[in-house]
Image (cartoon, rainbow, N blue to C red; front, side, top):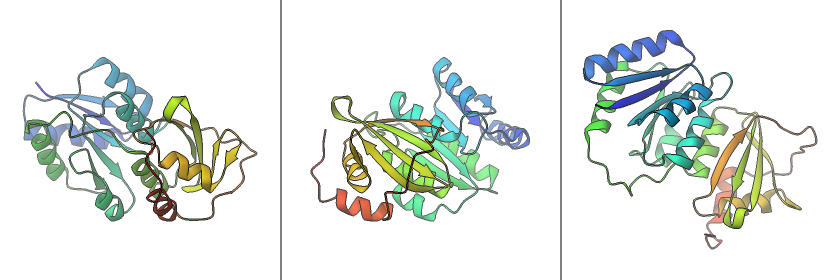
Length: 224
């Protein structure tokens, strides 16, 4: 039997999704979570084949769910429900790993896609988690305020500070700003976690776009 985790604080939408998924395939195990904390606990306690998550939820958002998947279950695909335009994100995301559904969306279409994802044979090496740059793209699109703590080679940590979806600063030891952001974005397969505490002392030290930072990263050798 295949298990799907549905994480959304909208109980009515969750119930509609449960109904659509049950009609699409009758033997699914469907687990509901009203926030990111409950979703992560469900991922720890169950073998889940697909995650369907909203981003904006109380206690812990969908970003926390994505961070957990990246660290511990990189092979598990995820459908992300969002209220924002996703064409730019869709162009960048690996479709076998992450798909976006802009609200309101066709429930039956999502249910059919979910069943197809569960039934296909997946190369375990094909999915390698949600890359840091993709998480940043999503955080910016959603207008999130948070700290993304990135762990790179030899345990080096970078703190990326986002305010209302804008990357304000990056800090690695005594290095900060654009140089620190570029360094962390050049790390290969870093781990990351989400913290919603932003220090009052954070100032805006990054004045270029994420695309500009990535162009600089492309000129740097990858750090493993």
